[in-house]
Image 1 (tube, rainbow, N blue to C red):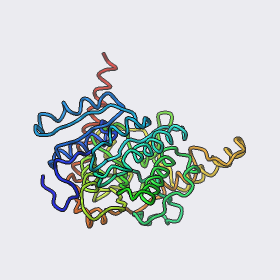
Image 2: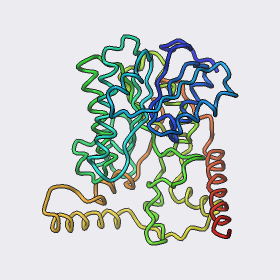
Image 3: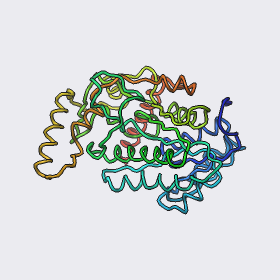
Image 4: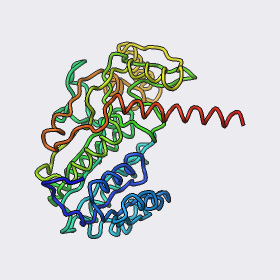
Length: 359
């Protein structure tokens, strides 16, 4: 698949961190399908060695170099970054611990940026971020959330370690750009779905004690199918004239929350659910903050609070206009086809789990 107006040659070395993850594996496949032949796949998981085997038959000219290592180790970072022209940085920290997520999202990114500061071949550093970095406080319900919207200024008060890590990661990248002129693009995918992702997006609601609390049923879901998302990430990494830009990644014809859940119940399983209006969950977030402040007697926030309610369930409009205009991107998989593939995958998991329980 030929792409014109790109910043590198098809034989230039490309580094993909987090390459054996849900999105990372698809980014590797997308790069290969575009004709890029020299890929260094970096991951701390041993599964990184299976990538070469997975794609070697389909892309016989490809030179896939699997590299197991830890971005927390500066020496591993130098080895990974040596001679690369473009870096797709997908590795990130997850979990509830702010300290652990900071270490695995921010400190690791710093090590990688330090490693490429003096790399003359580097043309672009693509940081894969998240919609979670946005503050929804000033946006009215139903308002447009796009690349011009505010990022959280106090992410530590959101109660979500992942948000905190991503905000600080972006701040670090901007700092290195200012100090060392590190060329970058930031992409912020919405809720990425598709085969391989076993969990429903938290923007639908939360499961508690066998009941799914469905929140904000009229909300539009910022979905992006895995193939469409990886295609946008790759284009952001190779197209000329977009250095310093930020791109939100969402698909066309986005469904409302209740529509998506209804399809899930019909195609996968009849999930027991209770509809919770937004104003109710927002009030419960307020109560949670009061109780936490009274019990903890500090300025930190509980995991469940009003800011998180605003981020996930306030309800917004979304746009992919910038992706289309600057990158020439368009979703290759429609929402109809994407949900069919996804629900078929989840249905297969359900049937496999039932079979295992009966044996």
